[in-house]
Structure formats: C-alpha cells, structure tokens
Image 1 (cartoon, helix red, strand yellow):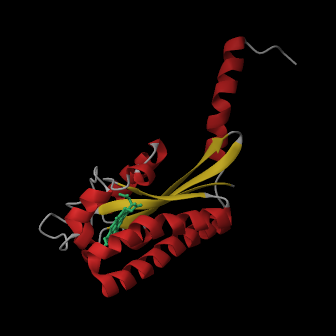
Image 2 (spheres, helix red, strand yellow):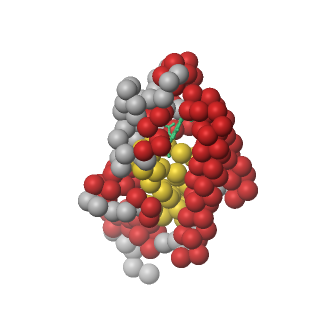
Length: 194
Ligand code: HEC
C-alpha cells in the first residue's frame, strides 16, 4: 500500500462520521414504529386531558399535564428503551420541556414548514446521526396549538379562571402563554438507536 500523505489521512478520518451520517437512514418500518409511539403519547394525553377538562375544568386539569404527561412519556420510554419527551417553542416545564440543540433545530424546521403551509397533522422532522458509533434516529412530531389549548396557553384574557394563579404557583418561569391557534407549540421528540 502506498503511504498516504498525512493531511489526506487526517481528512479521511475527519470525514468518516459525516459519511456515516449521510449514508444511514431509518427504514420505513422504523419510521412507522417511531410515529406510532408519538401518536400513542398524543392520543393518550389528549384523552386524559379532555376527560379532566370536562369533569373538573381547566384550572384543576393543570395537574393532568403536570403529572400525567411526563408519566405517559416515561411509560413509553420504559416500554421501548427510547428517549421520549415533549419540548416547547416557549417553555412551561423548564426541566422537561426545554429543547436541546438538536430539538431546537428541529423546532426551527417545523416552524418554517408550518409557515410555508405544511399540514399540522403530518408535520415532522427527523435525522439520523452517528452517536458513539451507533446510528441514532432523532425524530420530532409537531404539536400545533388548537382552540381548546387557549384556556392554558392563550393570552392573559383567554386563560380560564384560576389558571393564571395555578400556573404562577407551579411554573414560576412559565413562557408558554400568549399562543394563537395554528402556531407551533412544540414537539414530541424521540431519539432511538437504529
Ligand atoms: C389544563 C391546562 C392545559 C391545557 C388545556 C393544555 N395545556 Fe399544554 N401544558 C399545560 C401544563 C401545566 C404544562 C406543563 C406540563 C409539565 O409540567 O410537563 C403544559 C405543557 C405543554 C407542552 C410541553 C412543553 C412545555 O412547555 O412544557 C406542550 C407541547 C403543550 N403543553 C401543548 C399543549 C397543546 C397543543 C394543548 C391543546 C391541545 C395544550 N397543551 C393544552 C397545561 C395545559
């Protein structure tokens, strides 16, 4: 074998992870299984929230979002071995809802797609990156604000009675009010090895 000039060797080494990134992709089955889990999270949470809103009203339903939303995500994470969470474009739960660097980028893509007319129901963004030598799928499913969310995420005038006080007590750094229907509220995000 001819000796490789050291600069070329260094370049070849440096470009290996990028090549791996460009070449690996999730199979349609893997994408479908990932979508199914985000679908299950959103469906279960929305069912519980609607039930509680009807029975107890918005202020008393804040606890559903506070305890049940993370529980559902953790339950699905346990079942699949994947990382699953919800993040916000403006955050209410600082610990769980703050996007990391990749999630931030995903939200920017989702927002741009939403503004250029993408359908909220199917809006998603994903990427396969090599982490610790393993191809890993990062996936984000858009969560778009609907009218029924305004009771807890709308302007001060739109928040349901008692909600502002409860939010202040539970989330002193809450940023997640003042949204309008149709805006990107956040995403369900999953990261999983392939
Ligand atoms: C009863 C009040 C209430 C309603 C109604 C409500 N939310 Fe929330 N939402 C909350 C609370 C409380 C949290 C913080 C949950 C936590 O602690 O993880 C939250 C958190 C979120 C998050 C996670 C990111 C973050 O900022 O922490 C998203 C995304 C979200 N809500 C979207 C929605 C959407 C979309 C709707 C309407 C379909 C909606 N919410 C309706 C109270 C509500």
